[in-house]
Length: 247
Image 1 (cartoon, rainbow, N blue to C red):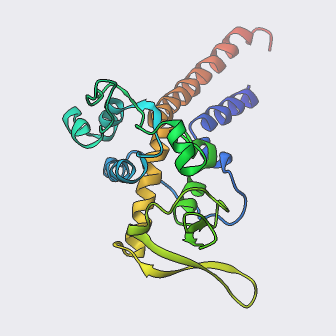
Image 2 (image 1 turned 120 degrees about the horizontal axis):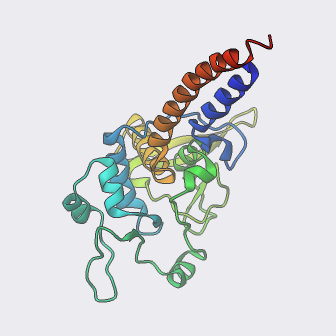
């Protein structure tokens, strides 16, 4: 009985842990970050960065505008004014209940970039939050690349350093021991600490997008554990009552 209770407790406790870390897409020394998807201010800042710098190429087509607005504390009017720039076949802005697709066609993306930019709804679930954070901070100048930039985490990436205005430009430096590091050679509009926070906010928003129900899941999981703990106590005393004549 005790073994069964312990097994149930461990299994259910595991359900309340976000499994993104196990999905990291790269081995190696990645910075370990912790994001709080209950922080609506961080989510709003991250959403603003995403809509301004990412949405033109990367859709999040498995989420709806009004659902995102509701979850991160924005009114539908704010969502319409600040999030929606895509038009329908008649040239009208799409409604707040539409999926978050961008206007770039696959054919145009292939012509412009040589590849269709991936949808990022599930990116933190696929790669992990640490990987996405390191990727966004890992761009450096590389004149051999078509777009003039490479990435320490994703070698020969086809994506430009879209946040260069905020971070500035880094160069890869190799020390006498052969260790590589990135060194900022041209500053952007943000200081290093400000850019670190901005990237963390963006990852927080992407983490929410990957699993909008994660806070509810953790809350419900806790209730289930409490229920099973109480039920196990009642079941134990019920078992003692049924088996008292045998023992």
